[in-house]
Length: 344
Ligand code: DAH
Image (cartoon, rainbow, N blue to C red; front, side, top):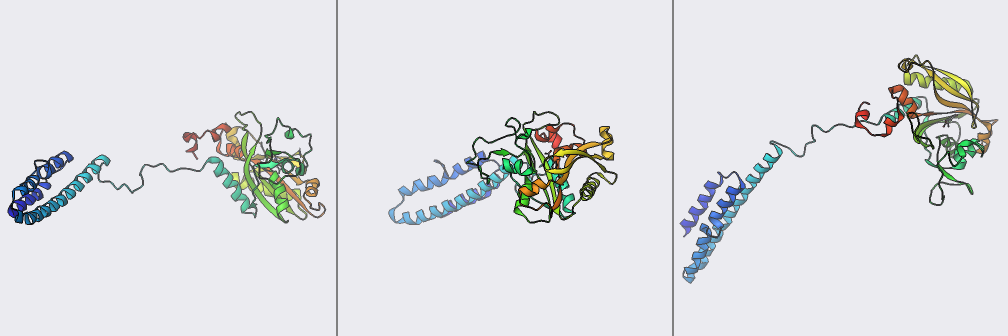
């Protein structure tokens, strides 16, 4: 009996190597442990043995069975590995990164924002944050913008119908809205910090604009604020000239035109000129607003306008990115078309 079982295990051992596919393995296994398999037959034969031989033979059969199972397990593992390799196209290391995964790029508006901010950081400006949901006081009143100003019209601006759920500190009975410009950060900074101040604040703004090639109801600005003693328009012009030279090259120039903003006096619109404009067929392009902080603004936040002076400016990130990158439609920025985004 022992010889018979040894022969059976040896047979399994030698034939196992030849198996390549699962179907072969299954019939191979059945030859030993299937209903008519040789080991099954041996087990059935035990019934006819004399009682005293049964434990000895039973032990031998069990040992043979364990050896066979070990052979089956190794054999199956090899076949499974082969199957996997075939499915994946071998040799393969599934833990490696896919070689053709495309690398992402930053959004052109994020790139432009970072470039603008880094230019100002070089001359000591730090970043200030405001909030996109604002109170009417921060967006308008504190900035000396009178109640009859058109931007305060319900039709012009996104107001919230209910103010209880918005977590922004309010003055009594005032309305909440999505900020229409980043100038509200001037107020938040003046209230939260001590002068002298030099801040730059990039962020998202909202207006009820009909969307077209140059308008979007959701856009981005960068606000600047500089507060110290004896600040003049000369300082403002020098900072903005520096900014445009850094952004557009040494030939860039600015031109100030008198304008009106409620929160600056005097106020200016800034045009710039640079080689970049040749591709747009223009000499000067209007790019931003600025001016000297109005004494009324200082009073609204508890600063003495006799003691403190400063300048502020605000620009649209989309507008600058469109000029610098030569983009003719603002909507490209928001469509998330990879053919557009991958160019930056
Ligand atoms: N808030 C203005 C706008 O949205 C831009 C602006 C103008 C900002 C003059 C300023 C400024 O800080 O002094 O069009």
